[in-house]
Length: 130
Image 1 (tube, rainbow, N blue to C red):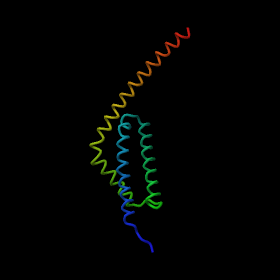
Image 2 (image 1 turned 45 degrees about the vertical axis):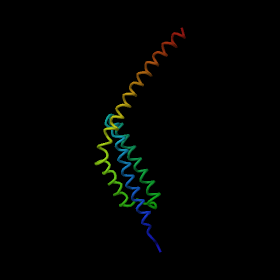
Image 3 (image 1 turned 60 degrees about the vertical axis):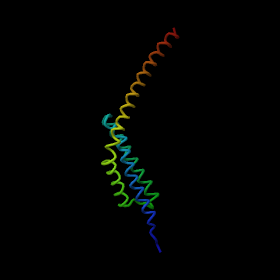
């Protein structure tokens, strides 16, 4: 006689909802880089997003879904993603954009410092050589 474990099903659906929320967060984290990068970077980041989401669903199906991904789990993941995009993203996305801008500025400053250091080191080694 087969029994259905309601707690396990509820937990599995809750995990699917969490995957949807996490995928929305990942999408928001990648968004500023996609906006600032060119087409190639956008393509690579979109590919990364799809691969990570596919891997997440695969792990979910193997652990919670007994090897299959049900329509209910997909629907709840989609609802979690849409909820994140509609309700959470407007509050968090500006923070992510500012963090990305700040880190981009610091990277540019670091590049300038490294370039100046390289030029300085080259001059010193040329003088030592003579």
